[in-house]
Image 1 (tube, each protein chain N blue to C red):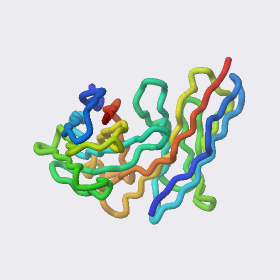
Image 2 (image 1 turned 90 degrees about the vertical axis):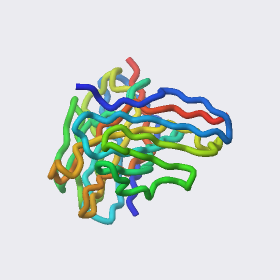
Image 3 (image 1 turned 180 degrees about the vertical axis):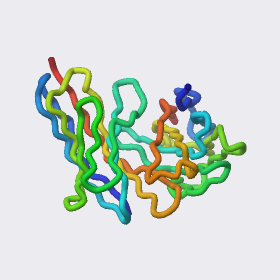
Image 4 (image 1 turned 45 degrees about the horizontal axis):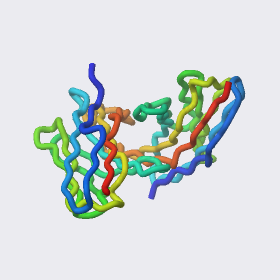
Amino acid sequence: GAGVSQTPSNKVTEKGKYVELRCDPISGHTALYWYRQSLGQGPEFLIYFQGTGAADDSGLPNDRFFAVRPEGSVSTLKIQRTERGDSAVYLCASSLGAASGRSTDTQYFGPGTRLTVL
Amino acid sequence: GNSVTQMEGPVTLSEEAFLTINCTYTATGYPSLFWYVQYPGEGLQLLLKATKADDKGSNKGFEATYRKETTSFHLEKGSVQVSDSAVYFCALSDRGGGSNYKLTFGKGTLLTVNP
């Protein structure tokens, strides 16, 4: 089956513009995570969805960042008034989620969207 | 809060050399531990994991043992290959009783294996 896909693979925008980044999780995965990876760093957690609701958005850096998952599948990360410091690779991961009933829940990552803010 | 500290890179080895990448963690609960790998031009892939103390995760000749007493999860391989050249990330997830398995990553260690 298909893995996690993300579009676009690259996005170049100008400071102050609005961008949307899309994530298509693995079919049947109810949990979805967004991470941000700056150059030379490990990924940092942004937001977690279980189904349609954002169960944990504690990693969003400020109110310019917002994410939705209206039907419990595809998710969109939205960034308003982009700043140069937002330049990074944005990663999406999905997993079986709460229904897995396991002590841990393996996340599968997409290839990422490289965002460059000029 | 949770944190992961892993060995600074880059690490450069010759083929067939022994590899160790150190990883230690701090967690508020009882975490699961992971090693992820990022090959050049590719996305993050799970390499191995361990969910409780003394568990050993293994895959593709790599191993790591969950050591609760030293809060460590060091990655080892007895004989590296050129194809192992990649960035390796140590990570933990600490569910804290809920269903949120968000990962906390280390900064990554770049491994280069020369023929």
